[in-house]
Image (cartoon, rainbow, N blue to C red):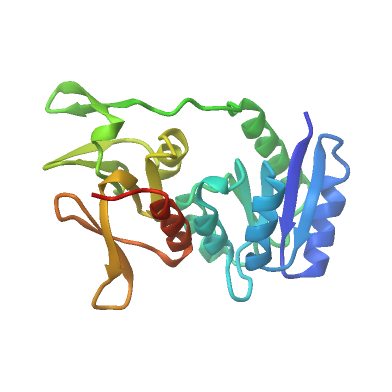
Length: 241
């Protein structure tokens, strides 16, 4: 198995160092390198790599912006690379596979690479879209049809599934749900929100100048900058009631 990999870092020496280490592994194919977040979004969407070594701090668009903008197009495994340890917690909040703190040793790099390869190999190549989800409520187990969900909100340790007047808690990550729910029906519009496209009735600017969508049932959900264009594309192909 050959794993397609991209390297994103605004420091040429850092890119060269990672590339040199990767070239020692015959199971890795470097699909491209770039020096900015904006370039990274285009590169990853074009090359579809399974693995990315992604710098955090870059001018204009940082590593977290890249992951947010890519949504479902993000690589299966992302390793953040940075000289600042203060970003470690945030990296794991967006479900990065690992976090390399510069300067790192060759041994540390190869441990991370081995973990990334194992994660990619074990991941199913195709996942059938979830038709229903099992949720626990008051000692009972409920089977909630995915089509009944209006929108999903990220909680502290749970995802909150809003379905009509009811809210169900599910111990699943937003990234897992985004990957497993039918992309024809659901669209991520924020790091903390996924909406059922068929429930969207309006997209508008709020009083603070930020975009938001209005759903059936009067719920209003913010749309982050990185997801707005994709949402607009999705809405353009749907006739709303």
